Figure 1 (spheres, rainbow, N blue to C red):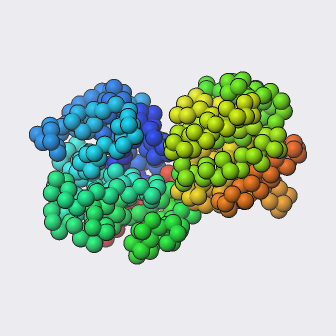
Figure 2 (figure 1 turned 120 degrees about the horizontal axis):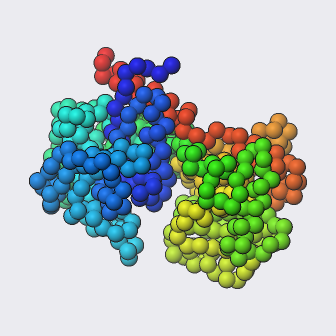
Figure 3 (figure 1 turned 60 degrees about the vertical axis):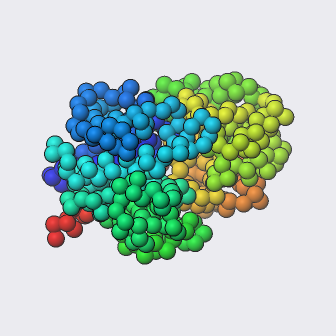
Amino acid sequence: MIAATPIHVLSVVSEIFPFVKTGGLADVAGALPAALAPENVRTVTLIPGYPDVMAALRDVSPILAVDDLFGGPARLLHGRARQLELIVIDAPHLYDRPGNPYMAADGRDWPDNAIRFGALGLMAARLGAGEVPAFRPDVLHAHDWQAGLSAAYLRYRFERRPRTVMTVHNLAFQGLFPASLLSALALPPPAFSIDGVEFHGEIGFLKAGLALSDWITTVSPTYAAEIRTREFGMGLDGLLRGRTERLSGILNGIDDTVWNPGRDPLIAATFDARRIAPRIANKAELKKRMGLATDDALLFGVVSRLTWQKGLDMLVEVLPTLLATGSQLVVLGSGERNLQQAFLDAARIHPGRVACVIGYDEALAHLIQAGADALLMPSRFEPCGLSQMCALRYGTVPVVSHVGGLVDTVIDCNDMAIAEGVGTGIQFRPTIGMLEAAVLRATALWRNGKVWRRVQRNAMRADVSWRRSARRYATLYRALMAERRR
């Protein structure tokens, strides 16, 4: 039963789908507010005023003017974009820049990123402190390092503080900047301490959020356990072990209205678990679009950042085995230049068998999910992962590493799981040898068409929506608010 009292949440993010996206954080930020609404949670999202965000904003009203926000005037604008309620930081000197929100066209980080995202944290804290009387959030929910200073500003500069939650989407990105910027960030000297923002002699944005927030969440239960170990803790495992009782993993979901094979306007033919046969038209369209041979072959797909973390260097090593089985591969993504070139070279050397598109194309991503037979995710670590959830939704059998959120969302098709009718994919340890074995397992499974279709239907019936996780977030918010009342 939903509690009668509404909760007002300020979500603090550096990107949000569909306006600005570099990864899964944007998808989460864009989908979670609607999922929380049935739990009587009103979410207002604070986002920098990038050009695409400003262009999308409707029903705009200024709610706060700032004479000098780290080098220039700024305003907070309240408005809506699609179904999202937003507060946008209109600060052209910080955010009116083309392209990627974090880096310039040459691939280098903007040199003032500390200031740009310090401003995001400061304005979040000012809202949390009640400077806009019309919106006084009960909970400030910060996402990843870019929002990490929110809790620090609240701790060191303001008396009124909402309850605070820090969500880690990827611990590998920590937002480390020189200690000399403390004054420029308008943080007092006491903030630079082991219990504050200091981390190995630098200012740690993420570390600050982890140390100073009331609660920490990660985007899957397994990742919440992994980051408390030296192997996955990225130097923060000690801090996280010390806060074990204030740390939980809440699994991400996907927007199952956007990722819906029964109504997807971006694919060649719609289908569902009861009517899966039309799916073959998507495979044919994908092969045609990517210039792949039309023979009946197992088609592996990759939709990913092309990085060491994602294990794509291992896939390059295993490619000869994959091709030797007669299978095909289609890759969509961008990242490390050597990996981009490796897949482009593979497509050139193996025309009709390997295809590669460097970049990101939303329509092509949907078609790969709808048309590939299996999705490869050989990640060395994976906080949650969303691509495998999309794959489950579309009956694309996920072949995934046994790490993080991949463990929590994919049931391995071992003999027992197949016998019990619950398997939804293939898991393996992230090594070259185990990836090679997983490719061979997938090939053998695919050749048994009856079992493969059963696995596809199992996958498509999995609940990958936000519903259960939204309830968990709402429960957490209410528990934190109850703590304050005690």
